[in-house]
Length: 413
View 1 (tube, rainbow, N blue to C red):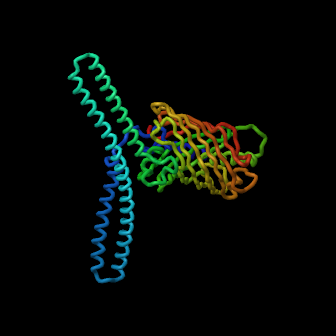
View 2: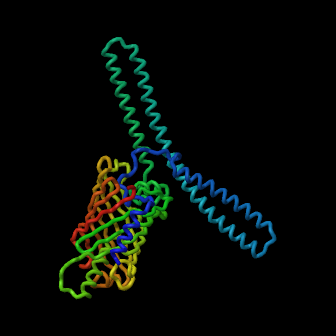
View 3: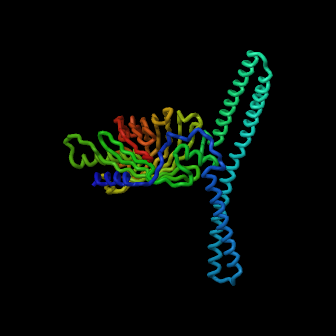
């Protein structure tokens, strides 16, 4: 039964045509500054504002018409419904206007530096024009060569200023290194940079991963992801399968208990349960304009999960659990981003129902500390090979030095 469910999940992944996004984006942005007011995001905001204004005007006309009628229960209910719709649309309009203002703010910041650097460039160009006029009056070869050398230096100076201008403008279209999604103005850029997704778009079938060691295998899928204010939400699923083939003289009950513990541990370290919902709050990150060679990303997370009886596991009772933790990611990319080498580490405090502790075989049925260290490599931002080097925790049952290897298939194939 468990094998059938595992293959069903595999089949669903490969036949799916849903466009997804990478879990952590190694390719990052191009090193170029897009005009904020010409971006698709800004155009969409302007369009949404226009559409919402039309709805508000239409609702106001309907409200005026209803208020002109003789009041009765039906008319009163209609007026309440229109007022509720008006309040909702006005709230949306206010949010959209704030977002538009944030785009405008970035554009105004940009224009200050555009004027500053363009003035510097114009001054140097004027100096070059003066030198070119002077060179016509020179009679000796030495004077001509010296003046031409000065012209060449001025032209190099222009290229330096243009590069400084590009770097500065690019830095304006970024986010803070601490709490990068705290400001609304930064969220769209951060989520696009770090996760390759827009803040206004729900991502389906985000990633798919297989992992296995000598005791258990797991299939983990991140099914739906979206953003909620400064948070990133993800809903996923984990199916585990015991693969231990030790020839021992254990009783059937002992063997079942061992398999249950192996599968429960596999689900714990790969997502938390058969189904999980996780919220991520970005805390620290490297500047995206450092050439994208190095990436450091630290974030807090809170996760709720559940194991469902009969869903590809050896549990007799459905369970629920939670985890609160800190996570770090460090990546090193090759020049053309075809290779990315990374290390991930996390530490969490986990807890759950009594049967959750029982399935793991823990001595004490109370919240515990656990974490893991993973190293790996991503190729072409599509295939991620990883090895869990260590799983550690406050209880012996959740510690393991066995290397768990895995492959994660990222969208974009």
